[in-house]
Length: 133
Image 1 (tube, rainbow, N blue to C red):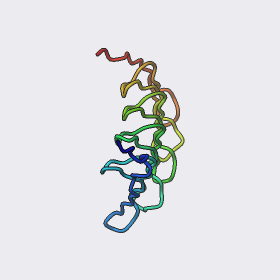
Image 2 (image 1 turned 180 degrees about the vertical axis):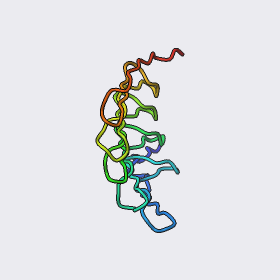
Image 3 (image 1 turned 120 degrees about the vertical axis):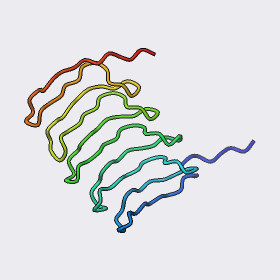
């Protein structure tokens, strides 16, 4: 039986441009699915909009970050098998002011979450119970 080459060897580089010619995204694909590191750009084609990795199945994996047009982080967290896991933080667009902070398990909010107003004050706290299967 022939051994398949590693995923990196089978990956094809992809560079997507918008109709106006600006860069939209850069990454690699295998069998039409994104794999490995990818970068997505705002409409100017220069400012990073999102960055992270895809696994061999084309699912989000590992740390990901999304950015506002001014370069400020809008959202940051981790994925496993395409689902949000662990600590996630969101900021009000284009600012360094937190919007909310909490944890995910298998793509569902769990435990204590804190929600902030635009001035940094705590708007509310809410506890999420794990969903029963």
